Image (spheres, rainbow, N blue to C red):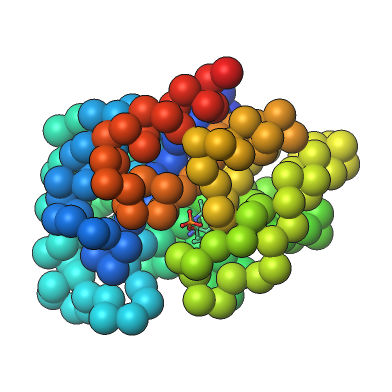
Length: 217
Ligand SMILES: Cc1ncc(COP(=O)(O)OP(=O)(O)O)c(N)n1
Ligand SMILES: Cc1ncsc1CCOP(=O)(O)O
Ligand SMILES: [Mg+2]
């Protein structure tokens, strides 16, 4: 397997859904299946926060979500837990500034997809130098899905990264909805990453469809 091309990465970032057991109103497996039917392009398993599964329960839950992704050809990314990603032979890993260092993770995962969170130009440049295939930028808008989230920066952070010459694929995250998704795409993001817009929706299928439409417009 080779490193993913920028072109393919941009396509996959289009509507990037993140989920953990704590985010869902109904059965997470149903939520993921509906979201896939609605058109999501990439999935991240993010099991953290209050009452999050750990150990064997976490691993078992991850394998169920991964099977659904495999059935539908949706790449499966693991948040934070590099060891779990390797054990499951996931398609990639997402890490942030407080996690294991990106260059070390790149060495561990070979050519799997590496996503790294960045909040400013310095972090973005370091992530790219360390081997990130994409950067996750946010929170763009206020979010209640991450306890330790930094202050929202607005879509201007993405515009400013692009104006500073960052050409690596970028996904915007934090408080993104079908209503504001267009704004971040116009600012230069390749896609949007969401938890609550899909996971807390009465209809994850409709929510995913609306996001797909907004990102395309
Ligand atoms: C696509 C994407 N972007 C950013 C994040 C946030 O990662 P991090 O800063 O490590 O915070 P946690 O998600 O680990 O709480 C992400 N998960 N995905
Ligand atoms: C994981 C993460 N990183 C920055 S904001 C955020 C949470 C995004 O969740 P939501 O889409 O519900 O605002
Ligand atoms: Mg993290």
